[in-house]
Length: 385
Ligand code: GCU
Figure: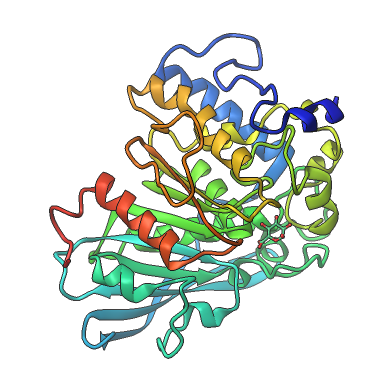
């Protein structure tokens, strides 16, 4: 079966029907999706792929504004450093949120939150280092707040038997981990939601226009965060590949077996039973994309990123379309892959494939902001361009 799937490729492999319930009943309305199928699909991903977080917002979650610096970026932005702390049976932890809020845009401003999986100089708080991975100045110039946190605050990216990070803090001490216990990607998604808990309290920000963004492994986390947490108005996956935006069945490049072998801590134990058995998974990644509906979704690929498999990423967007349609919305406005560097942005799902390598670049961010301008409506109010 897998040999056949690989031959047709993820662009054509047969997929589970996003609108057919496990009991065979067809979903025919937005209400039925929202009340019945959506929870079912979420549960299938929890049980089989990302694992189950033992806690959502901890009762003791605390926000401390550590600093407010009003004259950053030559007076164009106010920097805030916020410590988001929590504790559980295994100890205490904190996420350090870095936020730049434009000084010259009407507040409350929309916001892009990056789940940063690269070294922390990419989100330099002094701005001495300006990485295209997080172009905070460009975001601010276009009237967006730039927010970021580093994944290691939620969980270091190490296969350490789930001792450090939020696993060690919230998992029940002395109890063996169940096969659907959360992995590292789910821990990062959890972190994004705790940041959202704070963003909702900051009156300079419009919490109804927050985009969560991630690249590669961070993109997998952004999708899972957005799938679960309906407060994110826009979810952006940059080259998230396997177990991110890319369809698993028939996928070229990284397979489920590859990812589970190289990164055994990213997903739940149950996911390993699908190594080489993609066709037996009750889900595929178009169903993850569909969990974002009716909110905004953006999927980005790069031509040379064959490990992620761009056609497999594009297809997930296409196949999420029927769910958007239930809401009377267009998902992707193209049925076939666009040419490189020709973004498709008219529908509620945006897509582009950039020329070049696996990376998150200024071009990608520009496309994300264009999409947000178009669909958040900030080009009318709030942009400083
Ligand atoms: C590896 C991994 C990918 C992941 C990527 C990244 O290549 O196989 O699944 O997306 O790292 O995070 O850069």
